[in-house]
Every structure is written in structure tokens, then in C-alpha cells.
Length: 340
Image 1 (cartoon, helix red, strand yellow):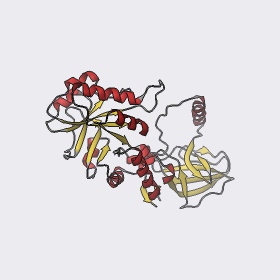
Image 2: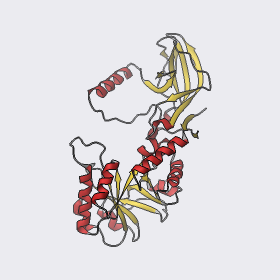
Image 3: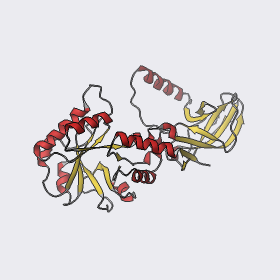
Image 4: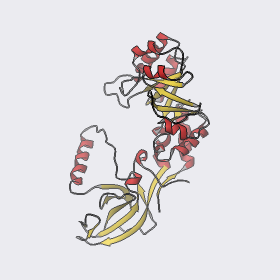
């Protein structure tokens, strides 16, 4: 019995092709848990797309991944870091001028620029300080914010950097972009015909068609309970007659773990307050769905299973049935990925 991710392979790949058509020259991103599908699987899909380059998160991921083309490491390297031996196809990201100067001659690099994200990157004043020899600078990279409440133009932000680079040397041959819409990339191509703009895309490429992916958990056991019956590690009382369902998926899979969310507007904030209030009385909705109903956790998830409460007015599943699961793929480790 496993926590499964079912893939409608034909539909999933058709979506990938649609994204590639919108973003010619895109660089697929495969990092972390591989968006729930695993880095190995995504590297295979990227090779199928024929993009020539795959982006990964860390140097260790680059050392482990099997990809026929270049592998771009997104996390900036730092001086003196302990990294595994990397093949010549690896391209490192550099976010500080002093690190660039310290790298061995011939190291292939992309220089990260400081954008309005303000995460990391060189400043424009650093551009004249970049060494003319040594590492091979194959392009520049800009990681842009998702939202722009100030109404600023992302194209102008990128254009400003292209002009700044061109002012101290030749125009950049390649600029790697994150979080820029397809029409904006087209605008940049028209403004700077001598520069190739390549979008680094992960979530939209792999998870953009939600109907192509279906998460499911197996039912391991069902136990009828009456109102007031005690159960579980903490011996809570059943709120009414019903069933306890033991299903696959626990904290080791990422079930019940949630990353902080940025809330916009009053309604999402009100829902967040409501969820927090229910949690104080040990009422927490689970991501599991049976017979069209989202079920409550009977108690916090265990390491590899969860226990759910099914109200008495719903016919219970039988052992071996599967429940749909609405989870965040980037924080979930599935036991298996199944093509259909």
C-alpha cells in the first residue's frame, strides 16, 4: 500500500510542449524533490524536450543527475565550498564578484544580477570589476519577483541590466530569466536582438496542468467508532458515530506539513484565522478526499500513515480503496509515480 502519484503521460507531455512553444529555448528546472516526480524523471523528460540545458538547485544535484546536455546550478557557488567533482558540462551560478575572481580559469559560469527580489546577485557597480579572463562567463541571470504591487515593468528592469552590461563590454550573449511572462520575453527579444533570452521554468512546466496529475492514498484499515469512543496516541474522543480510516501518507511523505503562505485580501485572512481557531480545539482538515468530502484528521499525521475521521453518514471505503489527495507537490515525497 503506497502513496501514489498517477500521471496522465500523454496529457502531461502535451502541456510541456505547449509551454515550450510559449517559451522557445526554455531551461527546465529540476530541483529538490523534483516537484514530486523526482529529479531523475524530470531529467529524462527534459532530455526528451531537447532543450540542451537542465537547471538544478545544488552542485550535489548536478553531480548526481544524468542529463546529456549542460547542467546549470541555480544556487550561487561560494569561495571554499565543499562540492563533489563536477563534469565539464556543469555551469555554475556566481552572485559575487570576489567569488568569480577566485574561480579557476575555464570554469563555466552564469553571473546572477541583483534584481528587485533582493535575494542575491552582483550590483551594477560590480560590472566593471568582473575579470576579463579566468572563468568563462556564458551569460547573466535575473530572478524576478512574482508580484509587482508597485506597477513596475519587469521588461524595463531586465532591459536596464542588459544596457548596463553592454555599457562595460559586449552585449550579453544569453540572459536567463525566472518569472517573466511569455509576451514580456518576446518584447525583450525585439529590444535586444543580439541577446538570447532563456526562461528557467519549473512549476509551470511540470505542474501547470493539474488535471494531468492525480495523487492518491491507499486505505490500510477502517474501524467503526461510536460517539465518545477514545482512540489514538492521545486518546481523543470521537465527536460522533463514524469510522477511523488509516491511510498511507504521513510526515515522512510531507503530509500535514505546510509552508507559510502570503495572504492577499480579507477573505484569505479570515479563512486563515478560522483554520487557526479550529486547530486550537484539535480540528484540522486533512488533504484527503472521499466521496467528494474533504476529511478531518482524527489526530496529527504519523510518520508514514494518517488517521482520518469519517462521519457516520458516509459509506466507508474498504481496505485497498484509494482516496484522492490534494497536496503540494513540491513538499511531497511519493512512494511511486505511475504513468497511465
